[in-house]
Image (tube, rainbow, N blue to C red; front, side, top):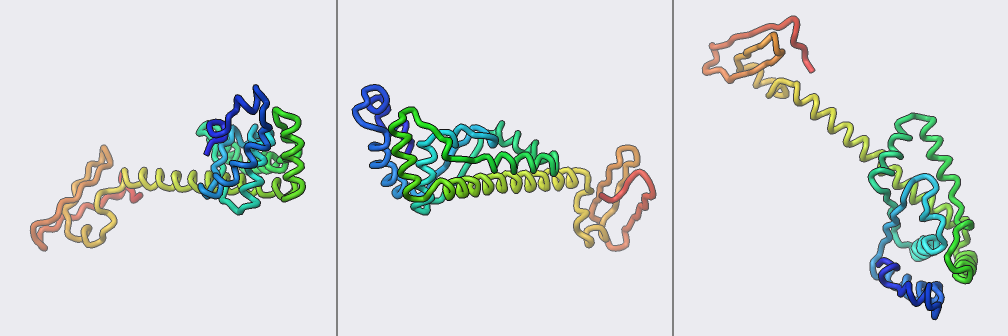
Length: 214
């Protein structure tokens, strides 16, 4: 469900035959119940425009009131910016925390002043803006947690791949070591192991330099 395509924006904004509050209030909640989840697309993690518009705040308030799961996402560039900030350490993390404390849905606006009045009145009479703010921050915090978790997993995977690239093939198996002939290239620090043809055909090469265990 995307209100831009479902609601007749021309009738609402140009002809003004119906207010947006009348239309969205009648259609959004039914569609939300049918779909069962909300994905909010933010432009940035710091003062996102999504949180400055009363209609998107209304959507959040409906999802919260109806206990519909909400997932917030960012474009790749904004996600990279978030990670760069977190990688700065405590200073960057504090910066992200400060951005989250600036969430204030009461400052959200609408194209139509009448719509803004109706929607804010609806939110104030039902959930209240404080609860909406708290839940929005919780949704954003959950998103940031997923970003950090994925970054950690990717980092571990890259390190494991790099380590595997320089580790002699089969080094994970002790029995394989016992029954192999080793060919060592001291110049390229390359180690190759070949299974022996018999138990008595054993060549052991001890390397004291140039090659070290990874």
